[in-house]
Length: 413
Image 1: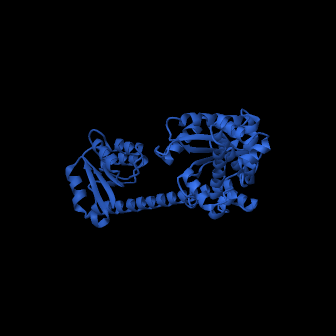
Image 2 (image 1 turned 45 degrees about the horizontal axis):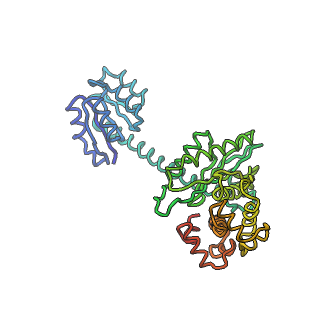
Image 3 (image 1 turned 90 degrees about the horizontal axis):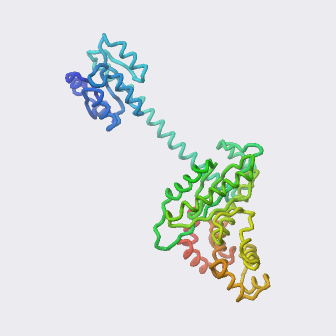
């Protein structure tokens, strides 16, 4: 029902408006009466009426001041002004300040009812348009979100399809402009820790983006424990990347003590066209994974992140990244890096504070998570693709490390 507020200093006028017409028959509810503008404003702010019927001349706050306050507080009510013959100039001024119409006193009840019906029609039309616009914005937002996901995961078969969708969504690619993908990976500290809400995680990221004046093209939650930021690189590409690294470093610091997760950040290789965004995302994801396993929490994709480690560890990690899909053993890796298996396991413990097996499994699960979020991979085949010979064992390990089985994880893509 339409909500109406009546504001007039004359009691009989208020009673006449409220009681002479069967407002319920017109789909109208009188939500309040006021004898001056101050009382009227208080009721208007409280009830947010659709239509306000107000006198021009009232004590404490007259009709013109009242209308100005209504507009100042962004109350989208249609306003009907009541005025006497000697107050016509006031009524004209009220119209200039946003009133919908005016009626002369004594009020013709039928004309008042007709004015309310007309304003009610406008109000309903405006509300309907607002609902349609909100629905459209949600739909467009969902389409844009899916576009970026498809782009990041490399789900577009042809570059022409990417360009066509980008044009439809009004996503222009400026000449001589590069983009890069920054991946933020989250790792839970303790099993008993409370789960951060999606809004909390996003708020920390958004606050740091604003602090560094980085306006992303997209901020996408690509996985339950991963966010991706697509941002422009300006003319000085190196300076832009340095700014993104500073953002990542501060983000990691800002999240400490506030979050049940530790963060690692990977900055992808610059992309010069739509098709290369997938490669930027892949490189950023791997950089974030390397960052989570090493001493630096923020890494570039092409950075020698293991430079601080001994040659044997750097070579062993490179071997894992290359051969993770095979039946990798510590003996095989030790032979490749020219040390004994026992010494290699000791180095992993000393430099990474992890076992060789833990590093291998973590990398395999991280790659599996990326595959499960890509529709081109079937859930049942992912385990074998990342080096698990037994699908049941893969499911057990995956659930232990992510908190859910692979099939459930894949549904979140």
